[in-house]
Amino acid sequence: MENIGILKENKQSLWLDFISRDLIQSGKLEALIKQRGVTGLTSNPSIFEKAISDSNDYDKSIIKLLKSNSKISAPEIFEELSVYDIKKAAELLLKTYENTNHLDGYVSIEVSPKLAYKTKETIDQALHLNKKINMPNIMIKVPATDEGIEAIKILTKMGLNINATLMFNQRHYNNVSNAFLEGVTNYSKTLLPFSVASFFVSRVDTEIDHLLEAKNKSHRLLGEIAIANSRLAYITFLKKFPNQNKKPLQKPLWGSTSTKNPNYSNSIYIDKLIAPNTINTVPLETIEKFAKHGNPENYNGWDENKILSKLSDLDQTGID
Image (cartoon, rainbow, N blue to C red; front, side, top):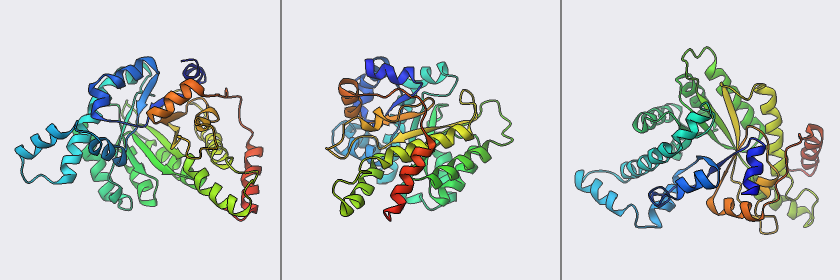
């Protein structure tokens, strides 16, 4: 627990990037909340697909749905199964939500990837899911495409909690944070919406390392860019949200933080991205690796000039 405690000391939230029926019904999620300090959960269609296809835990529910409606479609079955799991997870995290002044304790469910370039349809499905789950600590995941950005702004204006996802660069972050800030302008209700901006981490290194290795197998920027890219977004967050202890607030969330390169520490994207009022959403196996073998770095501020210099060096190699 010592490593997990360091996250808490630095005011960083640890969320679980996984969900399954067994996780909820077996008491494992409740144990993670109590014993590992997990304060939130993210999901996506791929996670649900794996949970449903890799076990028999959903079979009875599927049969029941088919018996009640023989014409029910596969997407409708998928929605019913995922909504049930999300609601149960939200119930387990409701106390966290209440005890943190609504600044933590959320569970995310994602709109269909097929709607990534359709603003109206994204809004419609987000409203549908939000109403169907009907829990105050639900976040609707919307991708940071241009069409998604517009949906984020409108949904925020309507009071929904949004997880802006699939962010890879500074333009994404600026667009997402501006959409949120515009969405909460003149919002009159007492319960302000909350948001997270999900910055993908390891996938950035996977792609950029591949390009760097083509130039030099031992390039000095290998394994450096994803962390620098994320830290720069955090520095922008501090400027855009000078008061991080109350709403309206959109916290940076580090996603895709399991290590893809076996040459790197299996907790590198947790160790080096600890900062106040951020969230790291982590697969279950990575939480355990970090708890046992992590080497967390306490937050002491990050040097913007050094980060910009590193990213400038990358530009000079011909990689954007």
